[in-house]
Image (cartoon, rainbow over all chains, first blue to last red; front, side, top):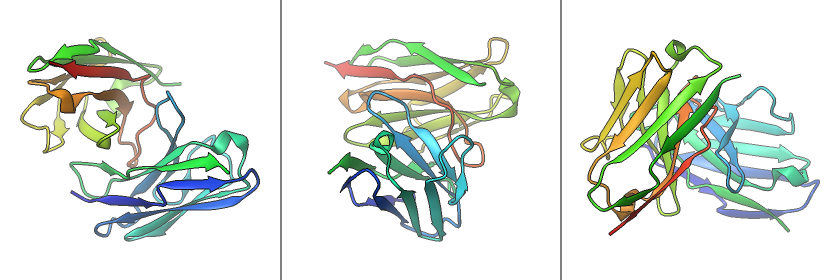
Length: 108
Length: 117
């Protein structure tokens, strides 16, 4: 299985900040990566697919980049609604599709 | 707008069979793959398996011996069975559409399954 490792595990930031979350794959996955946001008690919601494509309805302050084994999710101008947990997921090699362990973005 | 609603037993005893069903509305059931994913504090998000309307399935090798996903196209439903459950199978279970261009969206509301002895 391809292992997905996110860093940091916890990120403290303030409203208005620009933050970056990193996801590393244990082997190359091309651009086959998605990012999700999850709030307490809710199912994950997709933000980005194919590494850099913004899902319909997702604010443009979210962006994704990377290819191969290293990927980033950037949020430019944090809003109060953005404090949540973020996951990456690969779909280059399956089964199984695999997820990162998550990054908790909390308020500083 | 596609919606997924799931149901099933949330409290199980060790060695019992987990059984969940998900109904899809607002979308052609035959256009996509449909998956089950679970989430636990210990293992995070874990993809369980997927099914197409034809009944073609793929499973996570780690669960393959205990998992069956089936489909009822007449009801736009797909179901999950996981046999011989243990405490390690305690998790929130989600049904979801996908993968579609690799991503899973939308998701059902989730079913919390707790396995006790």
